[in-house]
Image (cartoon, rainbow, N blue to C red; front, side, top):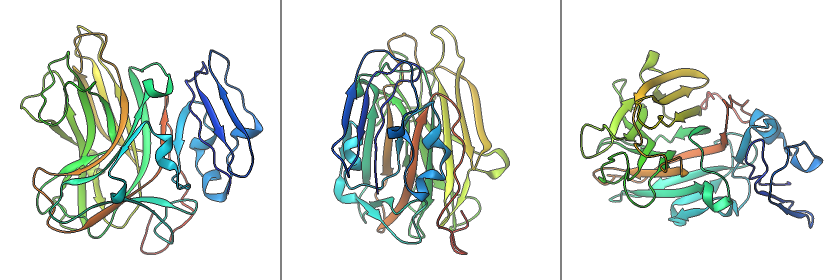
Length: 311
């Protein structure tokens, strides 16, 4: 199966890296040029072709976790032993999906960081992201909540881990998972947000409660879409939105992430972390078809489906 990785700054090409595993092509470019469609940029494989993100000119990063070197497509990664590429009916699209595990008596899953500066891209002030998420039957909230992928601008200073945001030191808007009112077969999701007006030392929980769309059933794939727009400096007009399977699940428009213009969106942080308290069991979740874009991305068609995996 062919595989390619594209790093593009929309409307102005900053970095382009294309690798064909079955050929010798390696193309690198910098500077500014109009984006155009070429044979190298076409999707390959049945699973990939079903995802509209492959052909979206505003999508500047797409990872389908089909190749063993997927971690090299990110700027940083941690705890590789907690990540495995899996095959079989559990896979969302294509031949593989990414499984991330948290072991008993541990907090840590794994992290994959996509930092814009590492790819010589301008840090944006708004960002759309989409990934597919499936909680395994083993996933537990009996010892509390934890963190899921989302955008951040921490700059090694503030905005995570109890480092309270003050508008100048950093911010983050990872997603969270927590206990669901629908019982143990469901997991509720939301944003876990460090912002300048956060009420406590740790991140503010902003659950995705519109029509209960943020209550996810275990053993089922969901399309998770996020949007962030940083506030105008001097105003509280920052925006967070979230969609589940294409339907709006959360919106907030009055946020202050920064009081200085230097704070921007530094990275998209694929972070899986349990706690507070450590996990009381071995547990896993699955991620696939991660896309970052300057516009809404939309959902894909699932290639691998059966009666036990509704989506």
